[in-house]
Image (cartoon, rainbow, N blue to C red; front, side):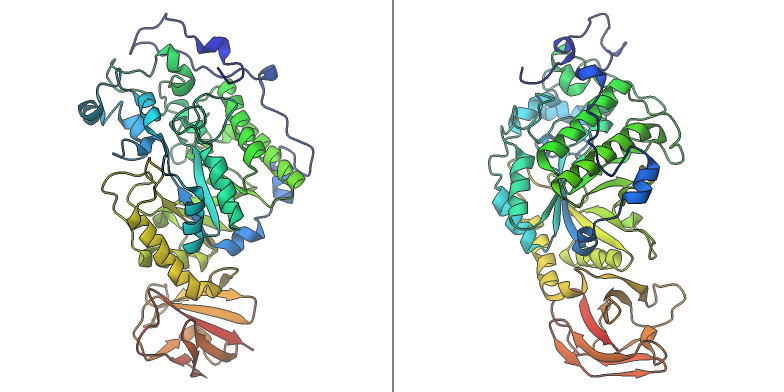
Length: 500
């Protein structure tokens, strides 16, 4: 076995009965029972240190648009969702049994040899992401299922030793960085604690000692879930053992050391306050390591998982802030109705992605669009078409997006409280002298921006990105612009406004 000290070769006692007594969670043996100490540097493992020293990287504020992805063993069954490994032992048991066999004969582990990624071309992926206008990429290094897509020295259940027998994370990191993009990872290891606990059946492989180093085995769920606290229960103690958390930290440190990610994303499982000692040790390890290699990096988390030292992420566009915030943030939103690939995935249009991107950047946020590759390593043509549509729009209108910041107002129009203007606008700016007005609705002809009336900043020039200079006049009721009758290009038109 390739890996370091799996406790007594992960052999479990047979003193339990299937479905009656859960075997204890098995973890790797670490020197002194601890993950590595964090290296010397600016940061210590305290909130005070993060509050004093951390800043959101400027490159991230400039980037605006990224690509997230859920790709893994769960892409093989391509059913239900990326939570297939949980549901196949529970609500989808009948469906799984009908198609693949009983999970004591064909368990989740048996999908791993079928996850071949034989058509995975990281250079082609990177070219597509550049064409889409993305500036950073965040693949899932390990999801809740416990299978690592990277070359790990801490587990045999990784993409180099099993499945595709390739370092998928390493190859993608090299490819996207060669095209000038930033590269991050998402890590959902902490959720694996009780994620795959079976339902009312003894016919499964989850407690088989031979696979304890993949399955855990999963621990019986309690009122405190490994998936994270329920709303308002952040002070409830986490269910994971200290030994499991030291392993979690060691695995996260390994990713930092091997791939030097520009972003490191954690899901809701890290939201418990009682996990703060491990989270703070990771932050000090990551940020001090980045100082040594000279990178501007950041952790990304949801809710209040980190009190300081993180970019706050919102899962799905519906949860995004509706006003300008005093902190910088990101939305991760799926291109389809699920995050992982499933047959019949229903997609957003490119126009809707563009709209969400604009809504975020005018309020101090980014959009990280999740794509769903297939198990063979291909990105389906319909998803590629959406990405290319976004890229076409950004090629014309990126001047108002990349490097911009939220203006004093995020927008005006009927959907903005307190405004009775018939048009609907969103705004960004580049410094104090250049404003971008995004026309969320297009009526053609003369249009008015009420927020730039004659008492506001004086306008010296107006142009339409992709359409040239326009006539205008600044009046008591707003900035009147003589726009063309036909909208140039696809989706949202953007006016560049120079201020004196």
